[in-house]
Amino acid sequence: MSMFEDIPVDVGIIYEGERIKSRDMRIELGGPREEYKFGLVQVRGMDEIEDGRIIIIGQDISDFPERTNTPFCLLIEVAEKEVEKDLEGVIERRLHEYCNFIEGFMHLNQRYDIQMRISKKSFEKGFNCFNHKGEVLKRLFKSELPFIEKIPLTFITEPDLVKEWYRKALEIYGARDARARGMSDDDVFYGCLLCQSFASTHLCVITPQRYANCGAISWFDGKATVKVDQKGPVFEIPQGEVIDAKTGEYVGVNKIIQEKSLGEIERVQLYTTFGYPHTSCGCFEGCAFLIPEVDGFGVVHRNFKGETINGLNFVTISDLTAGGREVDGFHGLSIEYMRNLKFLDADGGWDRVVWMPQDIKERIQEFLPPEIAPKVATETEVADLDELKSWLTKKNHSIVERWREEPWLATAETGEVTVSTLELPASAIPIQGIPSGIGFTIILKNAKIKAEKMIIKANKGR
Ligand code: SF4
Image (tube, rainbow, N blue to C red; front, side, top):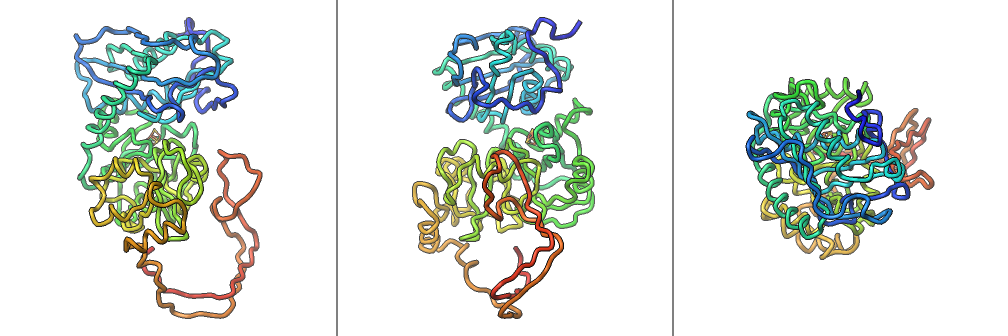
């Protein structure tokens, strides 16, 4: 008898990666339109919780009109004699995988960014209450992570209560994140393949100095996971010989990424956005993007609703970055990585950051170098690139130094070269008509590059 015979829809790995468009959804739990939403796992004592209990506070799925969204909290409590607090983040991230096993159920992102959709089709088949979802999750958690002995689940849609719990959840996430701060890179890194169902060449490389892109798995979480689940999507990566400590390139990491991407990605440099930047799946918390006009970086996060300084919104920047590719000048990242000393280290680190939304700036204020903090503009100070340039000049931002002409080795009035294959990132040439969400690369064959002037400069950093 199937473990899910009493559930009205199918459950299995084949549904992972299923996308549910807005027109096909019955309900959205959390998502970008809702300010308050989160998924949280808490470890409790064995006698503190009752196994299998499903509590629903607020309206249930079928109580909502079609195609609505709601504030949402899913609290999962777990207990076993030896479950450690260290495992909370890891168990919580599995929510992404297990929810996506449900036919007609889509789970995106993590923690306070969660977005879940139930399709109309699955709703019509009878998947219309949180009880069904709770039953699936508790069985999957117990069978996949057998160390869990007790697992009650609480679903909350009552707006005031979600808001109250949201604040508590942020404090819990913050305390978790603080653990790896200040650690230097260890000999062992951790890899996570959980998002390969959405981006088949993506592998997150998690180091003490580089939190996972989703902001949900730290180096400590990786370490705790491999102790209890050696066959899961998180595994050890021996770093091997250091190729370049500044860019963060290691023989062991390259070997693993070649293997896990089936040869598609050959090299990864962890602390740069150029050359061989870390791949991005799509559920990153934020994204660093090069602003060529000022030679600096902007950073935007998923909940930023407006346009960034270069006129693009988060969704467009995310489309340019995601898909398990290495895209020059675009870098999916977690907010916690911005608190690390190695943040974009090889590209100039904080000296190169010129713009970010006000609310991220407030969140990471205490980690911003004090001499840089007042010089990084936000949407409240500048509205376009001209204003940004004036702001940076007025504030004497260190980026202004980079604008000054560097001496060159040689020049020629015209230059022409022919290259047999020239590969460009999608952002290099605006192309109409390609649907959003599809990552692509532009390949020019037998391209002739002609320039009015050719300047040859000595390499001087990036
Ligand atoms: S973003 Fe990275 S660490 Fe987070 S779940 Fe996906 S693959 Fe794992």
